[in-house]
Every structure is written in C-alpha cells, then in structure tokens.
Image (cartoon, helix red, strand yellow):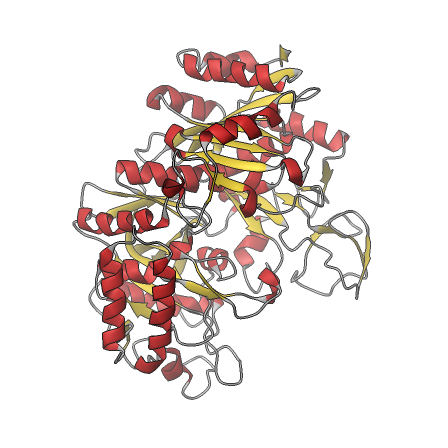
Length: 596
C-alpha cells in the first residue's frame, strides 16, 4: 500500500488528530487498498480524477460548448436509488430505532456486515474525504470524513460539501468528526447495507455506488446522524429547503419548508416569481437540508449544510424549474440520464421535441415511441450551489438566516386547504407530524395511496419517531421568538380531477400571505383545521382561475375531517407509548372543532 503524490500537505493538517490517522490505518488494514489518497479538494485533484474516470469509462464528457465541464456517469442497473429496506439504525436497543426504522444491533453489524469490507478495496484506491457540513467557522457546522474506494463519490462530494483542506482546518478547530466507511464492494444487492451508529456518530455503507447510499454527507450524515446530534444538543436537523423572499421594498424574510418527494420541493426552492408580482424576488439558500438553532436574539436561525444540489432530473424543465436548467449547463455531473447524438443530456420532461434517437441511461439505442424510459426515473444532476442563478447572498453566512415561517406540505387532491396557519407551536407540530401525501404513478405505480411522513423525515430520522416529535415539542419551549408554522397543499383538485391552483411561480402569492401573517398584516379566518386566508387576502384577480376555485381551495368542511382524525389516530398508535401526549390532545381538539 502506498500514498499518492501530494498527500503530505493535507495529511499533515491532521497530525494533531491522532484518532483520524489511527482510524484510516485501521480501515486500510481491513479493506486492503493498493494505495491511500488524502483528498485536498483542489481543482488539480478533481481534474486528475476526472481524467482517470474518463479514461476507464466511468464518465463520458458532454458537449463542451453546450455543457462545459459537464460529465455523464452510468451506474450499475441494480444500483439506481436509495435502498431503504437495506438501511439500518444500529442502536443498542430496538426501541431506540423505533417502529419506522430498520434495526440491527451493533454486535450483529460487526458479525455480519463488517466482514464485507475485508479485502474489498484490493486493487483500488482508498480515498480519505474530509468534508465540512455548513459554513466555515459557523457554530452550526460539523466535520465528517468518508473513506471510500469510489472516485465518483469523491468528485460528487466535492460539489455537495466543502471538501478537503477547509474541512481539515475545521477539524483542528472542532476536534471531532463523523466517521463514514464506504466501499462499492461487488455491487451485489445481496451484500448491500447502509448502517448508521448514532451513539458513536458512524456510518458504514457497502455494495452501492449510488448517490444517497454512497455520498455519506447527504442523508446519512446530515439527517440520520445529525438528527440524533440535534436531539442531544438542542437544535433541529431537518429535511427542509430554505428560501429568502424579498418584497419590492427590499426587505427579505426567510422560510424553511418540509415536503415529501413529488411535492414540489426543489421547484419551490428555486422559484421564479410570476409576472403578476413585479418587484418580488426569491433567493435560494438550500433545497434539501436545514440545520436550525436558537440565536442570541431568541429567533430560530438556519443554515444549509450542503454546498451543492443532488437533484432529480426527470420533470425538470424551463417551465417547472428554469433556474435549475440554467444551473446544470456548467460544472455539473449527471447520473443515469439519456444522451443525445451531440452528447447533451436528456430526460423525460426536457424542453422541446423528443429526439428521434438517444442513447438511454444504460447506453443502449433508444428510439422515440419506446415503451421504456430513456432516462432512469431517478436519474440525477449534481451541481454546485455557486451556479444557481437565484443563490442567496446569505447562503454561506456563518450566522445562518433568521426563519420567519416553517411550512409543512403534502400532496392531497381533496380535504387539505391551499394554506393553513397553525393556532400555536404545538398545533403546528401536529400539522407537521400528520403530513400525508397521495402516491403518484411515477412513485409507486399506484395512485392515491395515503402515506404519512412526519416533517418529511420518516426515511431519515435516526431514532424513534415518537421521541423526534417530542423533541419538536420541547424546541417550541426553548425558542423565545419562534417562527409561525403553516401547512400548504398545491395539489387540491376539483370534481373533474383538475388542479385548482396553478402552482409553480404562483406559489409566491401564498408565501406573500404567509409572511404578511408573520408581520401581523394579513387577514385570516379560523376553521377547524387552522387559520386560512380571508376572502381576497390572496390576490388572484389577474389569474385565469375558474369561478369559485379560490373558495374551494380554502374550504374546510368539518365533517370531512372526522375520517382524517381517525386515520391520524391509527398512525399515532404506531408511535405509542412515545408519542407526545400533547399531539393526541391536538387530534381530539380537531375532532371537537370538526363536530365529532
């Protein structure tokens, strides 16, 4: 085993941290790599790795004129998505993981999974990837180190995090880090595991090279491990976007929002204001993760711990997300999209006419009219935040940004109004705890199956969901000046199954009412489900909406909420006895207000 040239400077920065060096040596002794490369995050290092991967076929250069510095990677066909059924929380007791997580004891992990790392890196390079989650010098920030045998992981982590020398400097300041051990192994689903050890702040991943399974700073560190850190230290690690909304007077307020998949999260994070709202701007702080702490002023402040986007390509277009389409045109990596004859990426939903012929996501010939998708439905782009046209000037501020409102959203064709304000913090936690979305064909092949996903964290919480909700209740008592909490639903339909709300950029009209409520200016009406906008409080006079559409979008009919309250009771029963009692009280209050 040897070190590659140029490693000395980066490794020297960790001499004071004997624990890190000792751990790297331990993993190398198990995995048996031919060489060890300590990543410094430099452009030269990135160019070297990309050149090697182009040479061995891992990456294909894209059209340099149309997509400068862009590359396409194709993963193994059996390795194209997160594998939730193979993702485990390795707590000492099963009850700590809770009913919504898969559980494996640490002893079982040592016996059954650790042997999969033995000799797994023979003939390969072990890359030491130090990365920083959050701005340098910020009280929010955390250091992680991922040991991986995948150069694909290295170049993606360089985009998604602050990787290399900056992380080593922060490690010297903070003195501790989250450990991540990853090997692609033989890519067999039979030998694929993603394990999290919250108590010892450690992650193991083997048998996958796909994004969320392999980029350990993503959901593994920033949510599953950090949710436990947040509980222990008194803050929040959440699956939330962060945006700034600037009014025509130049005043900016910040909003965090939690949405399950297929609910418009990335589109909202990069929203372009509509023609009808002249002078308004939307600034992107982050599209996926928010870490929130109570500031010295008593408000809740947030940072996006990431430095890039790992977005789903299909459905992204100039109509749905023009900022994303502009962003990916430079310095971006694509995974499992299709390729045009002139070496440009393509996916279902891409603007313009569908090409007659493409190379599909597996590299096979695809022709227009084929029954198969040209791009893998979970195909991705990885782009630096710096390339986002709507990037907030405050995205990298070590202090974070102050949050005025938190939104919880789902996909409901009936029942749930366009926007509802919670009566108080605990009621808002109840709203977040009971988020539900109806599945789409694109998700499961089945339409309309209702799935509860508290705070959009069900797949990502590193401990018992009942305890997680209790932590949210406690946080409300520790924030002197808390943000207001709201529920939104862009997907309500009429009797003919047509969407009542135009969505996309027009959602800014709803955000405007929300922020006016936070400022004590907008009118609202109390309903059994919460406070909805008063008639005329959301201006839609210039929108081509059907007569009565706005009334239906905001309608709350008490009797219709009784079955909802019953379904919530069933879900809450799965979290007993750790469900906070106040949330059951809020459910009973809903029943009472609904006339039950």
